[in-house]
Image (tube, rainbow, N blue to C red; front, side):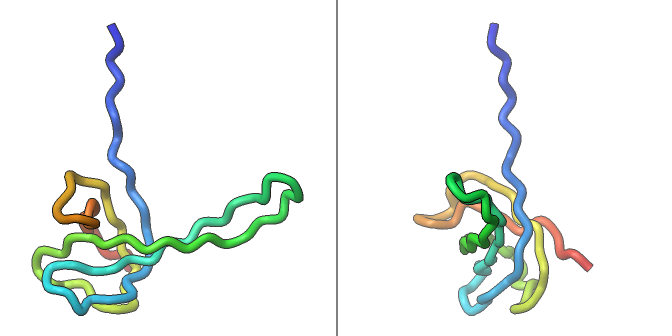
Amino acid sequence: MNTSIKTKKQLSGKVVSDKMDKTVVVNTVRYIAHKKYGKYFKVDKRYKAHDENNEYKVGDIVTIEECRPLSKDKNFTVISKKA
């Protein structure tokens, strides 16, 4: 019996836009190594995340968690704000 429990992906990043209603855009940064040369470089990705009470503003560092699809391209919710 295969009992694999999937964990929800959690990411942290900076809020770069809060102009939409109940949605913020969060920019996450990862550092990955080049396959051939081994040099590390920065990869940015933006995620749309659900913000129920419109409480997060541009510049906030937040943690987002994967959830069911809430719209065409919104699959994350904001969990908390890092101090």
